[in-house]
Image (cartoon, rainbow, N blue to C red):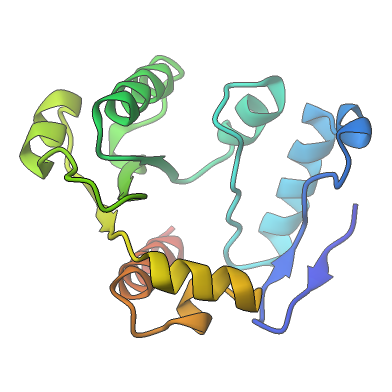
Length: 171
């Protein structure tokens, strides 16, 4: 594995490109890589698969903040509830677990108040549905905040990134 530089001033350590090499990724190896990155980078962001695999659990042990990203419909909220329950069981502090709603369709989502009530926690951010901006981002091969910086979704993501950066500085 190696860090790839991008033109966006972000370095990327990508997952294996082939499922055949995935078994080579071990919990110990990922933990070591994350620790190395924490010492050499001011902020390390991990996009984990939605599971509590040995690799993910090893990384979560050293996380300062966990963002639980869900969709605002019944199935998404149920999955978020299960995830939050596991994180709580693992001893992860509620104050360090942030709930993000990602509106992936234009269908009417559950109301924020209903989601807050069901999960007994605030929603940190809601990323609005913006098909045109997301398609533009994918087609250009650029992050949404670069491809469509004026879109509502990009503004929410940029604000969330700023919140996380401030939080990291405070640690």
